[in-house]
Each structure stands twice: as structure tokens, then as C-alpha cells.
Length: 490
Image (cartoon, rainbow, N blue to C red; front, side, top):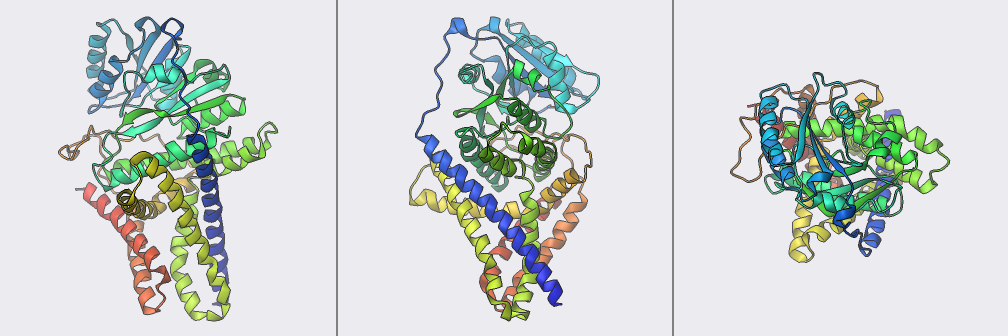
């Protein structure tokens, strides 16, 4: 029994230490972000006669609910028509193929250079569509938007101005959220994305560390795409893959926090699951493929290599979060059974400190977006607890995605269903693309829900109240994920 206790303690301590180191990296990004906020990164607008040729690519696949909205927003782009090309990269297999072609024909009649680029197969999925479109792309610069985005009329002008010198291969802009307040799920997603698109992107970019094109709402220099080896479907996150290949070739990226493209967040938990699975598995696939190349590259600085470890390893953190969660229950009993181990149990302080560091980081982001003051701070506390709780609830699902990547298991690119749901009155119940099938992981998540309920009651039984907050959040987090998944199924 003592051997089991020591093994548990060692594994628990390792997981806590990794989370602590990750939190330190977030603090470093926050410091960089705060410093950079004092420097305005708003490039000067390019005179009309010097504007370059731009191609906008719209990769779509069965987007019945949002295709009209997307095309309407693109059609009002304020850019010289003679220097703008729009490609609708349509891989659809349903009735939207014909509907989209009719919409495009109507827009083309206004004088815009817009066309549907259709393939009779979905080889390499989105990456394949982008690569195929590039064959006939006329632009020196390539802007990309997913179907759930609504870029403003001035987005192209503002973004192309970010290519301030020839070495810049990508300009990425921030994502806004048209339906952040729709539900707890959308609020938490917006909260997490805001941290990435402010603190993380700015924090890395301001010091010249590697960042990533986020798959949409960004613009590439066409020569950069080709020089880096073009789009590839080797991972589920083709954007992260090409981003690292480009930066390893010496290309620079420019992140414009003040340029925003609005987008819709998934409102159904099944849609959020598919998105999270793709992002986390793709991130881990890139960790396996790209990190060795980064570490071996002598042109990359040590600090950039360290940041790349945590950047590419971001999704792998769910492994350690899940490990700490699961091991926290036996740790309660080990602590009760072997009180003589004394100071060993103080390792929990690492988790408390890590949580506090993340709390501070997210507060810096939140107050910059939503404002300061006591009322805002109290609102932030509720939001942080909700975010932390749901992140714990998703830890098994995301860990399974990462484990598939590490095992080299290939899977199809499952696109996130779009809803055109913005306000409380909108409904998504009859969405024809929404999967209602329960995944096996839901059963395990249900078991974990009861497991952490047991852990919570054990805190009272053993009169050790230090774990009550953690086990409460674990119980609520897994309970929420299971309940919403079952609700989604009916």
C-alpha cells in the first residue's frame, strides 16, 4: 500500500509541476502583453493607388445556415474592385452547392470578381480546398474567412496595411463574438478565446516568438505560403502547421489586436466538442511534428524555443489537469492514512499558486476588454470560476483527442456545425448538420462525475476541507458536460 501511495504522490507532483511551469509561461506572456499595450500597433493606411491585389478565400462545406450572411458581409468589402478577387471554395455535398452558386452569380452581376471553386472530392479537407484555390488565386495577398465570420467593410484595407515590410508573411487579426452572451457555454468560449487573442498572441508576437495563423480572419502573403511548402492535410490544424513551417523559414508574423473580425461561437455542446477535439488533437499532432524541428533549428533563440514548447504543448496540458483531478481523490485517503509524510502534502500549494497566476492573467485580459471597477471584478470572478469549471469538465474529452495524436491515429476533419444563432430568441434545435449521437466518452465522463461526487463527500468524511472547492468544480464541470450532452441528444 505504501508503494501505491508513493507512486500516486510522485505522479501527482509531476502533474502539478508541469501545470505550474505552464502558468509561469502565461505570466511571462501577460507581462509582455502589458508592456506592448503601451505601444500602439496601428499601421498607416495604404494610399488607394498603392493598394496590392488581394484574393479572399472562403472555404465552405454544407453551410446552409450561414452562407448568405457570409457572402453579404464579403460583398460590401471596401476595396478597389479591380484589385479584389473572391473565391468561394465550396466542397459542399448537399443542396447548398446550387444555392451558393446562385448567390455568387447575383453578387458577380454587381461587378465583383467572385467565383465558386468546386472540387469533386474533399482530399485534405480545408487544407486541400485552400491549396486548390491557390492555383487560380490572382492576389499577392490571400485573406481567409471561415463560414461563421462576418468581417467588416474595412477589414481588408486595415489588414493589408499590416504588411509593413517584405519579411512579414502573415497578418492575423482578433476574433470578435456576435453571440458571446447567448449561454454559459458561449460566455466561457469567448472568455478563453479572448485570452488567446489578446494576451497570448500579443505576448508572443511582441517579442518575436512564434505565433500562429488562426485558420481564419487573417491574411497571408502568397509567396510565403508557397515558400513554406503550401497547405498540407497532415494534421487537423493545417493553420498551425503552415505557421510554424513559415516561421522556421524565417518569415515574420504580425498580430493586429485592434483589428477585429466578428464571428459566431458554437451554441451546442456537440459542436463545441467537435471543435475542441480538432483543435486539441491538431495541436498535439503539431507538437509531435514541429517541436523537434524548432528545437534543432540553430537560428531560433532559446526563449522562442521555450515559448514554442508551451505553445505547441498547450493542448497536452489537459493530460496533466486530468491526472491531477483523478489523483486528487486517492491523495485525500493517502494523506489521511500516512500523516507522517507531513510536508509532502504541501505540494498542493503549487496548484493554488498556479490557479492564482492564471486568475491574474485572465483578469488583465478581461479588464482591458470589459473595463475595470468593483462590479466588473465581481463579474470577472464569476466568469473565471465558470471557465475553470468547464475546462475541468472538458479535460477527459480533450485528453482523449491528444492521446489519439500521440498514438498517431488518423481521423477525418470534422467541421464545426454553424447555426446563425446570435440572440436568445434564435434556436438551433432543428439544425440538420448537428450530430445527436452520444460518444463513448460521455459514459466515462458520467463515471467521473460520480467519482468526484464521491471525492467531495470524502472531504467531509475525512474532515479534510482543503479539496472541497476543487472537487466541487470537478463535479459541476463533468456534470454540466454530461447533462448538456444528453440534452443535445434529445
